[in-house]
Length: 102
Length: 474
Image (cartoon, rainbow over all chains, first blue to last red; front, side, top):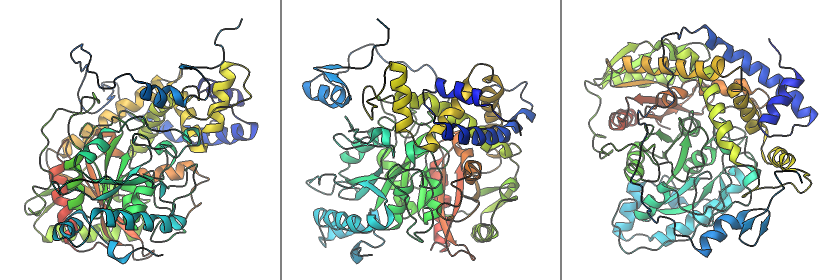
């Protein structure tokens, strides 16, 4: 079985934006390696002339009239339901850590 | 268990008849169910919440009027908590009704509450909820299946008349099979997903879990059809799904793939499935052998595509706009990684990381793209088969309900329990699980699966009704 390294797992975890404790990282490393080993079998399938099937409904590029439908009228109530659920708030705004360093 | 005896086995038709005859009222029945859940939940943990308000209505204008139902906790209801079985959404409140809820409201169906589930619908056992394990009503030491674990357990334990679930790789049909109820995954695009928390967008479908095939057809009548809020809902004609339930299987061509009867299939499941096939043959169906040469790659294909899409969909849970948030973060990146580490359970973390890996630079072609190509071959196999047969039949699951904890340390073993169900999701085709008696060894329910061609739920339901009439259901 080909094993992922700790560095591999750290890199993917960072891309996935999930902090892993050393114990969880080690468990993930083993479990992911065994799953990747299993899916390896797909490489044996000949697919040179096969198109990928990204979804099965055959609908593509659906558009609608460019008009305001008014389905969700802006109101104080909707504000409260939506922005009101943010853990960090300031008035009607959502507050979080700075993205850019000062 | 102190369930009111008058609720036992209630179906849409039988309850509707009692309403029409004036034997009972929707409010009385609603109250009895609320009490039954209150008691039963200590044992099964099928519900997350059961405080939906009673909605009075004028007259029984539809079969679904006053019929108490439950919705999986990844389907939004305005003003009600919606956790998807995750700690990251512990205090999240739905800000609008999902289209399926709005349509059932329109038919005056009565919501009871939200059912427990594997976190974000990832899991085949009901053991992966942040709110505790769901138990199988037939044996509380065993799993109900997943991820619509609470929906299946609630229907089987008469804690509702019917329930809504979502099915990404078998999450309606597999728990339905393990709990001895009917579970239907409609065709991809048949039912609006507006208000369903997305797991894998090319695979997810909402569908009913019910006590019989008629009810599955009736609920589908209530929820199917194009929706302007969901661009993946298909503008195709919605037939009356109950229309052919009595037509029987005389002359119906039923395909049986050899691939479904290989190693891994428990003998007690094989025996029940064979008994159904014999019964259908006696009823005049044509049993035809079909080949699905790429079916053996279905699990590998599914467990690349599903985590890839899940890793993208679940990136929205960052604890900024809603949900659980860490207080000790010192940068925005630190906040994301801490919120998500605190909020996601093991199975969600595993799949997000697996999907992120499959989509990352250098691996995309080998994993994700290759899986989407094999997916096309899998669908082609099914399309070729449907040139010769009307439905494809086999077991829903390789075994009956396993013990709680039996597979929780081995994710891959857990994934293999989806071996027969993922084909319908990968191809988009409709499929149903219908109970077919109990395993001779375990004494637990066995599910029989029927898959149909795209948008041919009518034939799937017709064949399923015939299976039900064989009288093997427990």
